[in-house]
Length: 230
Image (cartoon, rainbow, N blue to C red; front, side, top):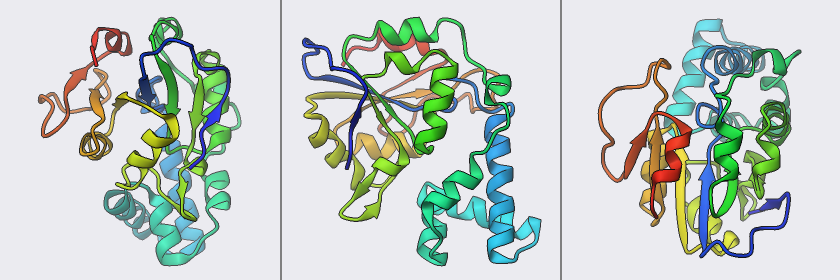
């Protein structure tokens, strides 16, 4: 498990750590970016596995639902190279042109009093580029991408149960809050003593119902994170 520190952590955080998802948490990715990533993954599966578009799309969805990441299904059942998969499914000619965020997010991010860690199942190159484009990168203290979530030689991205205790130990965290748009990630993190906040931006097709199970709270805008005590 690797923590990639980008800058010196703040001296006084009281052991408080913010784990922040990227897509549809710190920026709006549903209009173009995520559909395009899904399209590229479907194309990759169709080519690698000699499937029709429909069968490849179904396989992609099945692996995502079963393992939390299409990559894990492809590794487990087809032995694909994970770095090749990530490189070929996160390609954008002009990422800046399709990136969207609310103007206040960098400021709100900078005001969070604790260790600010980007925790994303996206590849490092994509996460770094989109974060720099949106003015977010300089406000992280650390970046943990899917390539960093390797434990005992195996890839363990969100929501893998093994990830959370290793992450807490690596960060030496006493109090942790995960902000994520995916309920499965939040439920598993909560099982390991992590506070959880479900972000469901309006207009992106997320359900309107209240948090369920172990999910502690729900917000519609990232600036509401500041109000959460943990």
